[in-house]
Image (cartoon, rainbow, N blue to C red; front, side, top):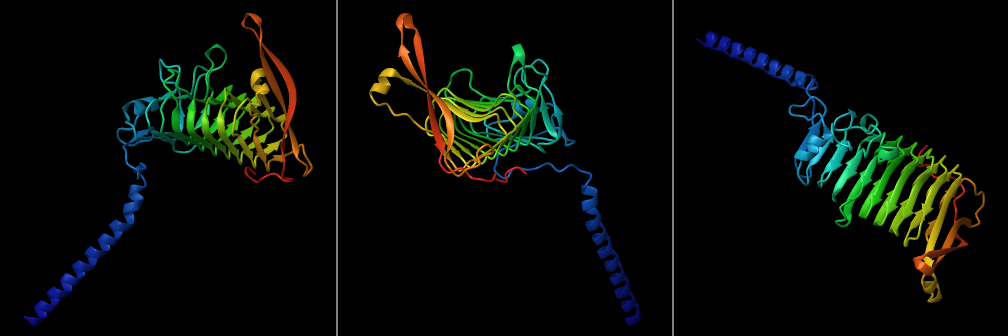
Length: 341
């Protein structure tokens, strides 16, 4: 009886050993098998995630369809691929909800227009757009922008916008920020666009650490009194106009690279004749510690500009008297910042 009991214990031990071995094999093979199943990123900030492209169950094939079904606070995640205009629409994507639109990889997640209308029209506040290449916006009579942040219905400003880590390339007009409040544009690459960025009637916006490269026209154009705009850590390289500033207040231009541009920076101001007589303040841009490839000196670097004095004329006409003026970068650096090797 003792012998039989001992043999039974041996058999149980053998089966236990086999069981443990099978568990170990399954545990090791599990990750290998799982590699064939697409992992979809999950939100840690709340809101539902919607997926476009890829092979996941229920994924959309058209970005706009996912946006249409999303709610405020949701995220639309787009897997790599090339996405074109939605049939019957002038734009590729209308973002009219407070969502995050995220591409898998900005180098291979492409939204491509067909030279008709905007690539992305952004109409809502509290929006993040990141991880895309935006290209081929409308030209000529069907002109558009790669990214148009603009409420055309005149219903006030668009607040809390974040545009970062995108490539905006090969467009006539790349990006416009119109009536924006508290918008940030950072870590983007603007390449081969005629107009890279237009900022109009906006306030408290930051344009930081972007590369503006090979622009045929104007890299950044400020118009219609944008105020409190911060340009820090950008690079303007191999372009015609770098930065053109119209009448504005509280503009900071700090620690940027201006490299091989035909006209790196200039500004224009307008003031009424009566305002001048009453000692109206002439706001100056704040230039500091920028690198200028055409200025090999520690002396203040002059920034050319024009002051237009406005006179009311007869029959409702207005006359503009141009007066050349200058501002200065008082402490230009002698070596370029290593932002974009």
